[in-house]
Length: 376
Image 1 (cartoon, rainbow, N blue to C red):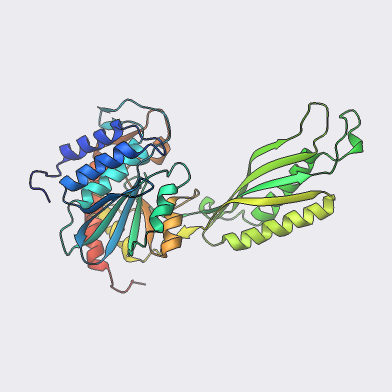
Image 2: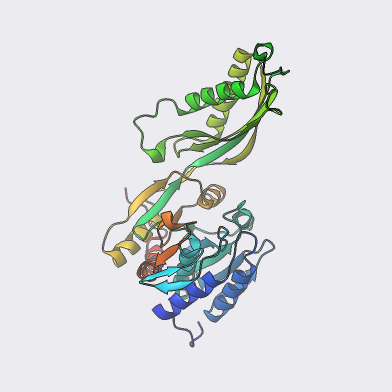
């Protein structure tokens, strides 16, 4: 590590402010990638490179275990003036997710040789189509664990995300009629609602006693049909977003969708077919894995309180890493997830600095726990 750089609290705050001043909506992350490459060099990282999609990747340390610390550089659009005011740093990405990204980088900078290896990855397009993470998992990283940096709050560890199937359902009723004689033809919009209600009822059945993190939800998000104000609709297109808890999978949910659509089409006497727009398997990290234990101990060391292990109702990049590489993955980072994407997005300076210490402690504990049998 370059002796001229010491990771002080002041340095850590300045690093985050500089990162926030670079406006990086999805697919415009290059200035931040170049800034991070430069800083990685100063902090003694090796194998620093920007890959073909624009992800920055660098390594630090040596030996086992190998842990991926991965965060995203892009933000949702909309500029926010960067300021440090009343104990908070404001700026677009302050919470989602430049504070987690910088906290991971600065913690990784502290790792010594033979304390394990950190692969630090700052990825593109998380808020868009996940181009960065999809490219990263194809790179045969050979890692044991991964943490994805998102604002969870310093005392929460996200251990699970739901999966997702998005479908486009097309209904065609064969002919249309003038709105003054609607009995002459079926109405594709009305028929679509029959399909949507039946799908929702079939998929969401028998769940009243379950917590939100463990229920399947089927939600109509878009619908368009009809061509004129006085003609019944011949065709209708609907999009449904289905979120799948960790005790289910895309295959069984997909089969339920297929049989329901088939049954309703037969019963209603209309043509209907659907296409799958997105399919992401749910993911949950094993609670007794060295990763979950090491991060729990890291939080205990710094916060003197046991973190909550939470299941999120959304779907994240953690699903892609965990299911593709089949390793323990959690999502963690400073910041309030409810501040993400808002007009006064901010992060507590104190929480940001404490999270750097949590990540450092986690790396220490992970080295100690790696390869030991899990406790029951």
